[in-house]
Amino acid sequence: MTSLSNPDLAPTTPAQRTWSTWHIAALWIGMAVCIPTYALAAGMIAQGMAWWQAVLTVMLGNLIVLIPMILNGHPGAKYGIPFPVLMRASFGTVGANIPAMARALVACGWFGIQTWIGGAAIYQVLGALGAVDLSAETGRVTGLGITPAQLCCFLAFWLMNVWFVWRGMNSIKWLESLAAPFLLAMGLALLGWAMWRVDSVGALFSQGSKFKTSGEFWRVFFPQLTAMVGFWATLSLNIPDFTRYARSQRAQVWGQALGLPTTMTLFAFIGIIVTQATVLIYGEAIWDPVALVARLGSPTVIILSLVALSLATLTTNIAANVVSPANDFSNLSPQRVSFRLGGLITALLGVLIMPWYLYNNLSAYVFTWLIGYGALLGPIAGIMLCDYYLIRRMRLDARALYDPDGPFRGVKWRAVLTLVVAVLPNLPGFINAASGRAIFPALFDQVYGYAWFIGLVIAIGMYWTITPRVEDRGDYDAGF
Image 1 (tube, rainbow, N blue to C red):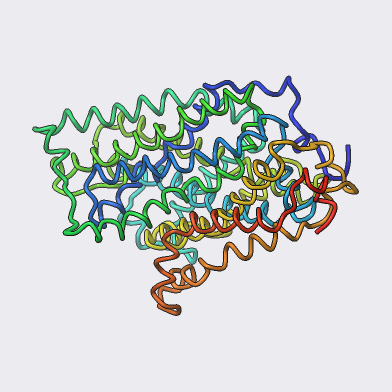
Image 2: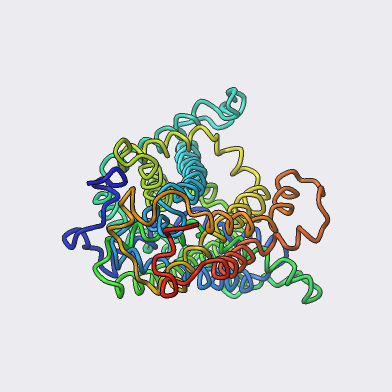
């Protein structure tokens, strides 16, 4: 075993490739069923979309991101290698840490956000059960900006996540497979409750568009579509971390196609319809499922809902925000950092970012966070796709990826240069969004609304242009 490998980064053996179509689909069900998915259409409807426009936007965004998801999953299933090792082919053995760390830090942020959501669910439901006096707690805000009870719930949910990190990939496979049917059943039960409680089911679908012209719609649609793609932009990069365990290409393709767009669209739809029902039942729109659970009254229903909300957040967090950064941190120093230690680093950084500040600002969440890292990860996806499909024609020397003195050694500056150039057009718009000021002209804000797409296209075009073909000059990685 070389200095660039360890048991967690090495290619998976045939005995380790046990994930069937169901396991891959269950993985996506577990990741897609979460509180952000439920409330995903809230921002779209708040900006004027009709319910069906919001649902179609969610569906289209997930069908778009499914394409790079399946394409980038191919090398994982074929060669059994994780994301950071695959990136050595284009960025080099040292340079691969650039996209790996970009992906890892985003995952740490997401880990913190999802852990905060899970802890907040526990906190609100405990309040509904009378175990916590929410009114008294509001006067006990700590220096962190949250109450002691909120902090305890946050840390309790954090420890649940850490347990699965410690147990490794087999525990994650087990968690996702068992949780998927339960989460689907709970979502459908909530939808059934909404339709049963209202006097007229037709009233649930009465929300119309607030746009007066088609131009107004398109100005909202494209940024929301970009944000929707950005929702899973991270997974479209590190999907090899999972497909390396797939039994076949067929399993990873069908598992993703059946699990991702269907589940995301279904749960966004459930969120819309149930929220419409809360307007008719309670006289106000309740987009937060945690707040809705607190209104249900029955302790049994509240406890069952707590289990469902916690499980939904846990399955999303573990799969989407732990596996990849654990491998990415391990790639920094394979001989010193294992998957387990990489996961613990992720969990620690997820606390240190104090995620409650980010999540509580919906504008920052969508336009700064989702679109912002989409501007960074779109170019990385473009480089991955161009290198593997257009340059290499799906042929890799997997053993050379682990050779510190081989053709992939060091930093491959073509990929680094492409990444920088592809990010630059979206940088002014990101600065405007992050600062809340018009530092750069409004034109850059419009460009920023298409950040992921622009970065992807520029990266593919530039990388293809400056990279010699493998068949023309042998192994081009020996040079620049």
